[in-house]
Length: 66
Image 1: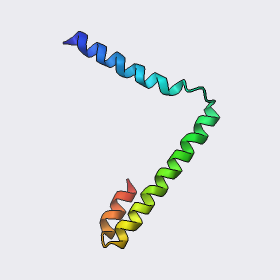
Image 2 (image 1 turned 135 degrees about the vertical axis):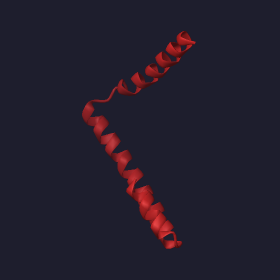
Image 3 (image 1 turned 60 degrees about the vertical axis):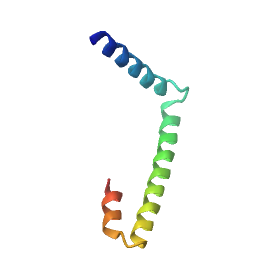
Image 4 (image 1 turned 180 degrees about the horizontal axis):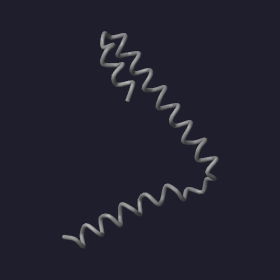
């Protein structure tokens, strides 16, 4: 059991390492991540606006805060 857990943990850690070594400088990574965050925020705002427009205003506000 313990051995199997160690294997699984090692496999998971291996997956994490791949992301850091994507050939980008920290500056490029920040730029890419920032762009992704902006897109995500815009998408979330659009969803909240749609929810508010359809009468789900209170629910939409709560979800947007997250």
